[in-house]
Image 1 (cartoon, one colour):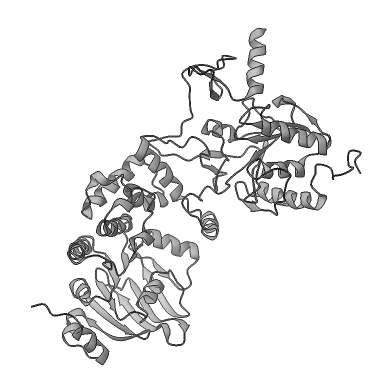
Image 2 (cartoon, chains in turn orange, blue):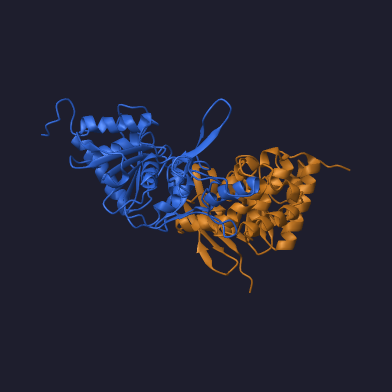
Length: 258
Length: 282
C-alpha cells in the first residue's frame, strides 16, 4: 500500500491573528506535484517553509517518510536531523537563485557541495557528478568552472535545481521557481522541470501565483487565502470548475490567449 | 609582590584578566580545536601585531620561564624583538633565541624546525580564528556548523582550488581536523608546518586578539589536514637547498639580493639555520 511521503495535519504558524498559515491539512504522495496557489500574503511561502522544516509550526503534526522508508516527525525532530534531511532528502529551490547558490563558488562546486557535505572525498567522482547534472538540466558542461554570477537568470535557476537534485532527494520544495524569468525562458525551465519530475520520480511541492505554471506542472492544487486552504483538488478540476468564489476570481484572472 | 612590579603587574595584565584567560585556556585544552570566546583586553600594540598571542603568553608565563618569540620563523624581526623586550621588561623573564632552551615560544606564521619537546608551550598569534568564515559571514551560523560538524564546505574550498589551478593551491592557513572532531584554522602558518602539529609533544595554544577567541591543541593530539582521496595533502618543496646552511628539509624564504633581481633561498627559521651552519663549520 502506498503511503504519502509528507503528511501534515492542522499545521499552524501565526505571526499575528489571521496572518501566516492556519490549520492546514496536506498529503504529498510519491511522484506527484502539488501546487500551492494564492495571492501575495495568503500564507503560501509560510506553508512551504513549515513543510520543509525551515520554520517550526505553533501547532499541528508533520511527518516525512524518506526513500529508505524511515519516518521522521518534523515537528519534534532535532535541529541537526532536520538540517541533515534538508541536505539530503529534501531539495529547496528558492525564488531568487542568489539565495540558493553560492555565487563565489564555481558551478561545479555548487553542485558538489551537497556531495561533499555527506562525505564524498574523491575529486574525480564529484566532478563527474557535476558534469552529469549540468547536462541533465541542460547547461553546457564546458561552463563547469564558471561562477554562477556570470550565468543568465534561467541558467542560475537550472543550476540551483541541479545542486538540489544531486543527492537524489525524494521531495523538492520550490518557491516561485519561474519568478523573474521572461516567458520563453520560463517555458524551457518548465519543460526541464516536467521531464526531471517524470524521470526521477520525485515529489514536488511548488508555490506559485502563476496559474499557467500551476496548470502545466501541478497534479493537484491547494488554493490559499488569509492563511487557510479554501479549496483543494486535481488541477484540472480546480481550474475548470472552481467552487470557492475566490478561486473563481483567480481562475477568471488568467489571461486567455486565443 | 614581585620585585620588578613598580608600574605594572607581573607580565603586564592584571591577575583577574589572567585568571579569565586561563579559564578559557583550560576549556580550550579540554575540547581540542573548539574556539572559546574571552574578554580580550587592549594591549599596548595594535591589533594584527599579536595582541591575542601576547595575552595568552601573559596569562601562562611564570618567573622561571624562558621565552622565545619568532615572527615568520625569525627571532630578529621587529615584531619578535619588541614582544620579547616587552616580556623581558614587564615580567623580568629570561629570553632566548634557541628553540631547545625555551619553555614558552610565541610565534607568528611558523612552527620551529627543531622538534618541540614535552613541557614546551607554543603560542600562536591568530588573525582570523574561524575556518568557515570565508564561506559563511554569520557567527551564529558558523557556530551551528561547528556544533553539528557540517564541514562539507571546507572541501568546497579545496575543490575550487583544484578546479582552478589543477591542485590544492591553499598554501597557508590550511584547514585541519583536530582530534577527529573540530575543523580548525591553524593560523597563517605555511602548510609545510601542518604535519608538525600532529601528535606534537608540546602544548599548542592559539590566541586571536581582535576576534577574542582562544583555542588549543593539547600534546599528542591528532591533527589531520583536509584533502581529497585523489588529491592528497602535500607540503611545499624547493629545488635548491638553503643558500646559507645548505639544509634541504626546512621551509625556505625567497630573498631579493640586489637591483639585478638576484634571488637567494634561505631558511625562514633563523635559529635552525644557525645550528646547521655551526654543525657544518665543525
